[in-house]
Structures are given as C-alpha cells and as structure tokens.
Length: 349
Ligand SMILES: [Zn+2]
Image (cartoon, rainbow, N blue to C red):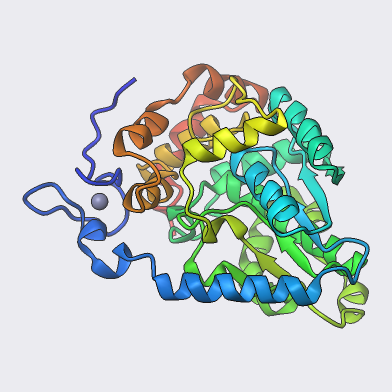
C-alpha cells in the first residue's frame, strides 16, 4: 500500500507535521538543522557512564535490582535481554495487559521471561474500563499537540499507566531502577536516565488527570496516581533508565538477537507495532485528528542514525490494515459521527 502524502525526501516527516517546511530539494527543516542531526554524542557518553556507575552501586541491595516495563514488543524484549545478560541485573518483568495484546505477543512474553529466567508480573485492568479510557483519549484533547508529535494519544494513556504502576512497584519493593524499552526518537535526550520523583512530576500531570477523570471517572486514579502514605515512606527515588538509547543497533540486528529466545513477530498487528492490536487504530485516530502518522518522528530519527533505511520506514508507515482498524472500531462501538468529529478535536479551544 502506498500513499500520496508529501514527505521529506531524506526522512519520512510529512507536510502535516507541526512546524515543517521543505527546501527546493524537498528536504525538511529538521533534516537541515544541524543541532537535530548530531545525536549529541556528548550527552550519550555521559548517560552511558552514569548508567554503568549507578547500576554498579545499586545492584544487589533489594529483592530485585530493576522492574522492567515489558510489553513483549521487539524493543522491550531486547532491552530485557540487555538488562539480564549484559548488565547482570536481577529483573522483575512487568507486563501491562490493556486487553488488546496480540496472543502471539503473550506467547512471546512467557517464552522470553522463561528463557531469561526472570519473574513476570501482569496487571490487567477491567476491559470495560480500558474501553472507556481508549474512547476518552481518542475523542478528547487530553494531551498537548507537542506531546503528540512523538506518540499517539491512546499509546500515551497506556504508557502513562505503565510508568505509574512500575513506579509504584519500585517504591513498594524498594527497587532502585525502572527500565523501559524506549528509543531516542520516542523520548527526549535528557530522559535516558533520570531520577523519578512522583511529586516533582505531579503538577505537570494534573491537567491530563483532570481531563481523564472527567471522561472515565475516579477509577483512573488506581492506575495514574500513587497514594500519599506510600510517597511519605520513600527514602530514595528510583532511577528510570532507557537502556536501548545508548545502544547503536539496527532493527534487523535486534530481531536477530531476540529470535534466540524464541520470540516471533505477531501477524495481527500493524507495521509499527510488535505487540498491540490497538496500534493500527491508534495511528488511524492520530492521522484523522492531526494529519500525520505518530511514528514519523521516531522512524526519521532511526533513518538519520543509519539504523533504518527510508524505504523500510515508509513500508512500516504504509502498512496499515483497514481490517485491524475496523475490528477495533467495532469492538469499541464507535459511530461514524464520532469518527467525523476527530478533525475538530484540536480546533475547538
Ligand atoms: Zn527530513
């Protein structure tokens, strides 16, 4: 499947991406911008150094060294391998089951956890709640347009819950590190390693929480808040570490490595996901609402760092299955009227 969208001739950012312009050769301003270009080797080296140092001093002091947000996708599978095999951490793998994980992804999760000999904990909210939440983040301006340049609204709702639940686990069990499988195109450079202080980020999360509470009720607090007594008992905040950001590895190599654990690619997800059946729907909602694909920035980052070719990236973006999108539209009982309201979401202020 191909599309007729005007895109940068070097990366895959499209004409609808915020603040984009093209020169006479069709190259976008993000590709021309030197600052954006060089992935800031200095910051990367410093983060690498800090990660090794913190792991060395933090290891072996608690029941687990790290809780890993483990989706069963290729990136988090490889990150889990790194944590266990390269860094020798005693990891608790944590899987958030949003009710839409591909069955093959679940087989992968169990197989990989077994192969790496790690404990696995799964949390699954009620499907009724999850459906309400997906509707709420599809049809309301929950997140800022800036946040949505990196991720779809629905993905962000799930990931916010994953982050808070992992932090709660770390605080309860006094686990010093929280690991996730993000790559540099998905997160800002200054979040490769950072101290996760719940109260520090509480204010910035409040507007989001208020909007979601209004739409789905207080039940959201179970997944997006941490109780005061637990926070009061904290003596040391854990570090969030995104190990994959300091590795220079192509997708091809990642797949080659994780296949050794028995990992296989699910067939019922779109080209940009390796675990979630919602992804094609989430991208569709994002494209209808904002006009571009939520993976453009991440894929462009990989292209710039020679970790993916432009052709491979295009193939991923263009691999959108109408069948997958329609299946979710049906499961969530979404009406044509609701779908046609998407273009207006960020217009009315
Ligand atoms: Zn470009």
